[in-house]
Length: 365
Image 1 (tube, helix red, strand yellow):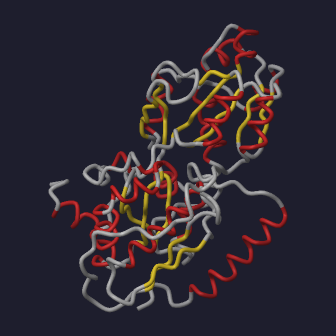
Image 2 (image 1 turned 180 degrees about the horizontal axis):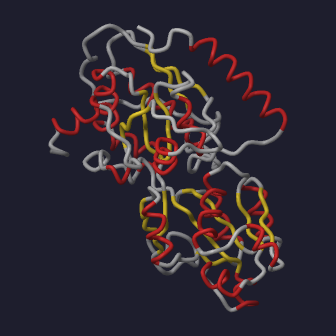
Image 3 (image 1 turned 30 degrees about the vertical axis):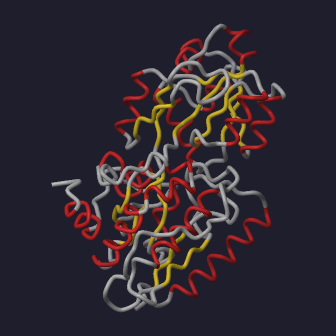
């Protein structure tokens, strides 16, 4: 059984387009922590499955991020794991075709995914209003929320703090201090969060430039090098505590991770974000707990996926939580008992198959 009979041609065309884009310039994996090196090669996990689900074999398409990213490695392992839970003879085709960020929700209506990682907040925005100039899209349902603990990790350089005597973004905007902000290209989660934070505080990129500052778009390695060389004063990266970039920056540069104010955090709560706690001493020199706005990686599926298939997927990932965390430390925040909660899924409706599993386990009423 094929969920999308014509998708082979679609995927081929889409993949060729992605290869062309890659040849023209570097791309960012913007779903969370994908810009960091993969934790491993996505080796097979010894599952807890005792037998395959009953029924006819199915072929499902899992759209994920570029080969070599952490997200791709996780996806590869999940694909292998899920094949043990689906009817015998089924396959999970893991393809590196996701644009990540705010573009991922559109994969479903375009016939390019049966399964995909989407961050909770963009899932909400795309469903309700649309993103990136596109109209609303509602061809997906939620499966598993908050697999990771990605959040808007923000730091100032110590030189900037010493020069201006401020260590919050609120103070920068209020005093209109010239600040050079480093963030990812437009369309990424990093950039979206940066612009949202400034907008809520009453400023725009143009305002920052009028104060004598700048907003610099670039890749993670480029921006961290610029921060180290004193060419940017602030960097916002929507990533996890396992980020090699943040760990390296804390060890090699004089920076301070900053705390957003309560009003700013509450605003992001209303936009589908989830509060993520960064324990003290997570990074060198970070002696206090930090609470960030985050929109963790979650799993969504096509709304027309059969109930039995969706049930098998959520059962497989939930039953093997410990094995997955052992292989991928970034999945430590995943809690099957809470993965169904609307706040972890951008408020997107659960797929009936996922709801069936969570209710059977007693996780939800």
